[in-house]
Structures are given as C-alpha cells and as structure tokens.
Image 1 (spheres, rainbow over the protein chains, first blue to last red):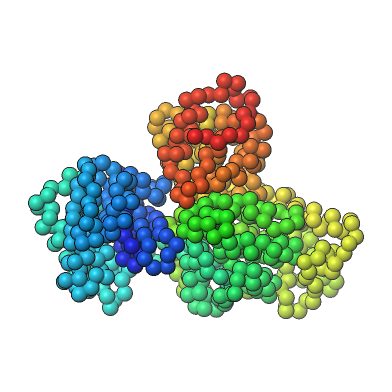
Image 2: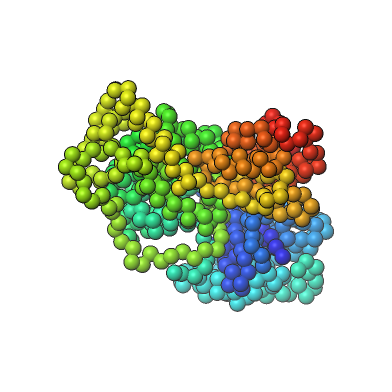
Length: 186
Length: 394
C-alpha cells in the first residue's frame, strides 16, 4: 500500500530535513521510500513542501497527488495543499500558525506544535521534529524507534538530545489528542 | 560501502563523477543544479581534485576543456540559462575533440523562467544549441540510481569518443531522493588520463583510428601539437582544403553514427502486445510507467518505450514499435520536441500524438492515462497503416 505524506510550511522550518528523517525511518523498517521537494525561488522564507512516499512495493512515481496525510505549518501551505488531500485523509496543522482550518471529510488535528516547542525546548527550531513525533503517534506510519535512529544519523551529535526530546514531546502531544479523537485514517 | 540512505539525484551525480575519476570541476552554481557544485566542492579536495567557482558559465566550460586536455576528467553542471552560455564552448570541445561532461538540470524557461520548476525544454538545445553541424551525445536518467550510472557512462562515452557528453535531466530527478548505497570515497586519490603507449615519431593528433576516434595525448606529456577551433587537418593545423574539411566533418559524425550500438539504450515495458505505446524520458517516464500499469489493469493494451539516451535518437527502436502499435503517445514537459523525432522514425506507420505540459508541474500518471485512454477508446478508423498528422492530445 502506497502512503503519500506531504509536509508543508515555510523555507527554514526544516520541512526538507523532516522529510528525509521520515523517509529514512521507513527504510529502516524495511519499507520503500522516496522524497520530492518543491520550493519557490526565494533563498529564505517562501513556501516549502516535501512529499514523502512510503510503500511496501517499488515506488514508480515519487510525487504525491492523492495525499493521505498533510502537515501544514503555515496558513498558506494549508490553504494551498488542502485540495490535494484525499477526502478520507488526515490534516495536521500548527494551531498558532493556521488560524483558519478548512472543513471537510478529513480528520483534522490542530496541535500547538510550534508553541510547545518554544515553551518546552526554548526555541521553535525543532518544531519539525515535534511534528514527526505527532505524525508517528497519530498514524503509526513509522515507529518511534526507527525515527530515533533516523534522527541520530541526520542530526549532528551536539543537537541530538534536543531533537530526541522534541520527538518525544510530539508523541505526547498527539497521544493526548488521539484519545479524545479517534483517528479514522490508518 | 555505506548503508542505504535517501540520496538526492544531484548528489548521486557528484558522487558518480568522483567514482568515474573526475578530478576537476569548474562551475557557476544555479538552481536546480547547485547541489552538484556544493557536493563537488566538498569532495574534490579530499580525493586530490580541484574545484573552481568561476565567474560565469562561459569560463566554466572553458576551464573544464583546459583541465581535460591537461589530463584530468572534467565536469561542469548548470541549468538552462547557464547552458545557453556554454553553447560556444560545447562546439569548441566537439571540434577539438576534447572530452568533458556537461550536466544540464532542466528548469522551466526561456530566460530566468521558473528557476525551481521542472521542464524538458532543453532537449533540442542539447542537440542543436551550438552552431555548426556536429553530433551530440545526450543521456537522460529517470531515477537517482540511474543518475549515478549514467554519470559514469557519460565519462566513459566522452573518453571513448573524445567528445563532450551532456547529462540532461529535469528538476524533479535532480531534487528527488531515493534509497541508494553510495560507495565510500576511501582509497580514492588523484587520477590522470592514461596516454596511449607506443606513439609514432610522426604523431598526428587528429589522425583517427579505424573507429574514427584519434588517440588522445594530454598536453604537457611530451608531445607537442596544435589545438584550434578552426577546421584543421590531421596535424591539428588549420586547413581550407575542401577534401580535408569534408573529411573532418564527416569523421566527427561517423565516429558516433557508426558506433550507435555502443551508445543508444532503450527500455521497453509491456510492449509485446501493445496497441498504444507511450514514449517518454526522465521523470515523465516514471509517471508513464505507472499510467501504463493502471491502463493494463483497466484492460487496455498499452506499453512504454523509455529512452535513457535522447541523442543519438533511438530511431531503430521507435521504428520497430511503430510497426506493431496503432498509436504512440509522446509525453514530455515541453510543447513538442522529441515528438518530432518519434514522428520521423515512425514514418507514418503509427499515429503520433503529443501529451505536453508546461505549467511548472511534472506530468502526472493520470494525465498520461487520460491521453492513452482517449486513443484506446477511439481507434483511428483508417487503421494503423495510415499515420495521422501530429496533434496534441487532450
């Protein structure tokens, strides 16, 4: 089964790095994975988008078009890519960055990703990794252990503990929500 | 060997160049090719090579040509705007028969265009961009693994035929990441091109062997000779003698056209019983492969001919396909380039229909599926013996 995940936000939020970690965690679990990145011509800021395709079978076309899971860290990303989400898909948005959440058939999770990163870690920088923890807890598309290993191979040693903490915070954030809102997607 | 990781197409290109023995890179970074320069800048000093960031793309290829004739395998990478600037020196390298590899990661043009959007608009430029009549070798990978393999192949063909080889792929192939195990750089050091042994005393730099390719002796290795962008005779000095002029130009063509079997490469997929074939290359071939599988699942007899070498054009393979199918859909991210080659090779034996898209997004499998479904649902009433005029589907 092919799963299409789109991570979207602004340049500088670590969208591309998060997609690499997610894809490599899937590889560690013996699945197939591919990533595709799209961004505007700006050197900083601007829209940034990463598609991660995870599948048990060989991946022919590495670009998402019936998105199963959309993570939106900006309003722009949410508004632009909402239409690519399949009707029974899942939308995860950062509460403080996406004030206007679209309504539809998809399961919607509004999580304080950036705020919690800032409050507990003192910076919004690892919000991308907090989001990965939330994705894992809500969907089970990749496990915590594989994510930890993938993070360890992509993040420099000095920042590793910080990011592993961010991952756990993401897990806890989503676990609390999941109990009240059963996911119907995966 | 390291473990399997997600590797970017452009990074695979740089790593393959190092593995192929490339020890000189001169370039001017440009999206969507910049990761190649970034990677080469980091790696070349570790293996005894040289990286130079040049003032522009004209100088970049000039530096590569100089390094190559000095004995190093050389590469540069760019995108459309820079590729335009390289055309003059591509012609020089072709005439002076100096090997080098030029990577063009295609973005949507013309001009500055859409710097971060994919395109296949440079297919004809890669063939005809430089002035004068000369052949061209252009390779078009469709996956990260194939970027790696064809980069190595580009160096081999460039050395084998003493000609610039162009590696041409779109932004999606350059920026996508797929699992791959990259070989370690351990044990890699300086590499120089080996000179031919037993050179005759009256060495003529442009006297070709039977296969049309003169043996290459690096400058500064003991043999003095002349290199020029003027038409020259076997001694390398200019000539206007009509017989010699014609002989040189014909030899430049024939060293490629007589050795097509060493260069051309196609990948047929489910074509045996197909009534409609898709012709595609680069990332579009990946979308086409998925479209073909979906069409098969819906009972349509559809196949795919993917070419990983655009020039020389795989004429024989396309002619064979045209003999057995009713129609060929050519899917490309331009408004029709390869489609004219396909139509020429098909020679009226099959209807040739274009499936073009130039909106900055890669062509999706659904778009190609729509194009083949239309043809499968409405067979040409005149039958396959009468090829239709070129038209754009959808």
